[in-house]
Length: 183
Image (cartoon, rainbow, N blue to C red; front, side, top):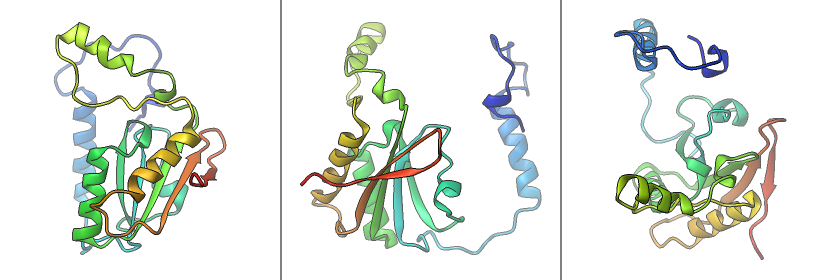
C-alpha cells in the first residue's frame, strides 16, 4: 500500500468508486484479516503504561519506543496536549484497565506551533458557530509538555500520578528529549 509520502505530487485525481484512500485501507484490512489470528490478549496493557502523543503521521510510536502490540494504551490528538478528553481516556485506562504510568510526547516542528487560538474565531466566521474546544496552540513545546504533565499530576480523577514523564520527539533524528517538570 502506498503512503502519502509516495503519492504523486499535484492535485489529487477525482476519486472513482472503489478507488478512495478509505477503499484502499479497507482492502488492506481484508488482506490483513486473511492471516489474522486472535492474539488472545486482554485490553489491559502489559506494561501498564499509557502514551499520550501528537497525531502527527511522522510519529511511529511503537517503533520509536520499542513497543509491541498489547504493551500500552496510545492516546493521540493534535499536539499531544492533555485535554479533558485525554484525562477521560487516562482515567478509564487507569481505573478500569490498570495502567500506572503516563508518558507524554510532543514533537519538533508541530503544526500547533504555527497556528493560534484565532483559529477558533476563523472557524466561527466560516461556519457560523465557534467550536466548544480550545485549539491548545503553543509556541514552546517544552513548556507545553510541562503544562501537560501538570494537568495529569493535578487531575482528581487519576489514581496514579507518581510516574508521569514528558518528552519532545525530534522528527529529524528520532530521539526523545526528556522535559523535566516545572520546579
